[in-house]
Structures are given as C-alpha cells and as structure tokens.
Image (cartoon, rainbow, N blue to C red; front, side, top):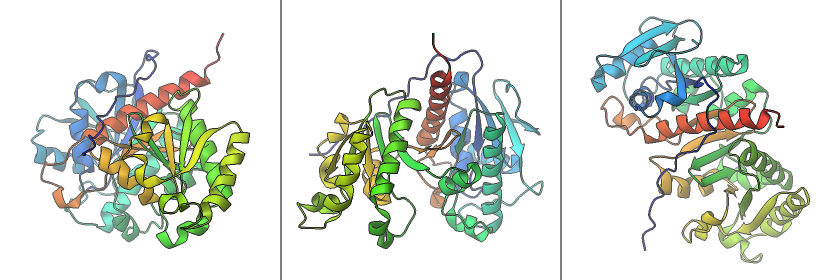
Length: 356
C-alpha cells in the first residue's frame, strides 16, 4: 500500500494588524538554486499581501539568476537599510557582496560563494535583532563552500544560534500538521548514542512544547518521542537506551506538565499514520527524523528553528548543484517557508500582547 504524500496545509496566521510582516530573505549559495527558488516564490501574487520581502545577498547574482529564468522585467532596488515597504513588483536587495559582480559558477562549491552566503545570514540576523524585520528565511547554503570560505560551522542552525546567544536551538521540520523535532542534528552517527542523554531529551521536549504553544498556537500540544534502537529496543533485546535514558526523561517531562508518549518505534510511526494523533514527534537523530519527513514532504516541507529569540525558517532541501542554472528548481518549499515565517512571527506577536 502506497502512502499518499500530505499536501501542504497553509498556516492560518492571525489577522494582520495593518502592515505586512517584514521578512529578510537570504539568497543562499550563489551557485545553487537559492536565488532561483526565491525569485519564483516572489512571483506568486498570493504571497505578497502578507509580507514585505527584503532580499539579502548580491544584486548581481540575483540578476544572473533572473536572466536564466527570463525575468527580464525584474525591477531591483539596492537599499542600505530595510525599507518600511516595497512597491508591488519591485525587489529590494541589501547588497552584502564585497565586489560589484561576484562570480556565479553554477554547480560549484567555491570559497567566494560560501563567504557571500554567510555574510547574508549575518546581516539577516542583525536585521532581526535590530527589529528592522520580524522574521528571516534562509535559502540553502553549501557546507562545503562555507568551509572553503573560512567558516567553521556545521550549518545555518548552529551559526544563527551562536549569533543570537541561543543555547537550545532545535531543528523542527514542518509540513502543515506534520512536525518533527530532533534531539541531535549535525553530528556523526557514531556520536549519537552518547549525545542522547536524559537532559538532552528533556531539554528538547521543553523547547518543542514551548514552540508548539507560542509559535504554532497549539494550546495543549501532544508529542510522540521515538526510541533510539530498532523497534524502540524491543524490551531491551536491541539496546538499553529506551529503558535507561529515554523513559526516565519522559517521566520527568510528564511531571513538568508536558504531554508525551513513548518511546515509540520510529520505523512504523509514519507508515501507520500515527503522526496524525500528535502535534509533533521528537526523533533521536538526524536521519531518523528527516528521512521519513522528506519522503513524505520533500517538495513542500519547511525547516524551522525552535528555541531562537528570532523567527527563522528555510526550505527543507539543499543547494541542488546538479540543476542549478537550469530553471528546473521547484519553489514550493521556499514559498511555504515564507508563509510559515509570517505565521510564526504573527503568532509570537499575538501571544506577547496583553489580553483583557
């Protein structure tokens, strides 16, 4: 029996209080599909009324990608600061390139590309911290290019967490009601068992539960927690972590007022559609959570970082060097990442406002 992929259920943000939500959009690696999927998303007229997009990267790179797509009428305005509003049909770009025409080499992981991508991320975080924008959406970067460019960081999430002084960032993949968080993310598989501790699980559950309440407006969230081993350890036959580490963490979480179930076997959770009974699932490691998520929602899933003081989303795919510069990239995940950013920003504002 083939399981049908879920269609993306667009978030229902609170009604806007006047002005659209300002979103900083980084263009990602100039040699990947980031600028392409951003441009395609911004051509969707249904998205624009809810947001004021401010692109961060290189105006030259954007023009190169626009030419490939045949967007010859693109009206690009280079700005020094985030504008209050952007006229319909125009594109505002905060240019952070160190040269007027940085090279665009489709499909290549270059030091110049890595540095440009990360400078854009830095500027977007600063714009969020300054209050110039309410959210940021990051197009894909290449970790190889970033390393070549001199940045010693595992990825976007860790870099943004360091910039914002956040000790508890949690990767959460989102596709409508399908949400998957991770206890560990960008570490070698060999290091996962020692990194999966009671404290780590409990910490992620607190971050996830708080995010479901404040970022997604779920008043009484219910979270499923995966086991680490096959079949959730099968009563100790395949490992002791479920009994010795995960179950005690869940008992403490319940005492803290979090509604959790587990440890549950990860292999059958999505196949039997148990995810429909929960507001989120917490996986122990990267591929345990992301492989099934991307199988179900690859072309429309969103990567959201919970536990940050700023709102940050991104598409759930990479630079796709193999199709860069060919006009083939699908923008659905990027478009949805923008919608989730707007919805979360508005939920945070609404929940922060005094009532009565």
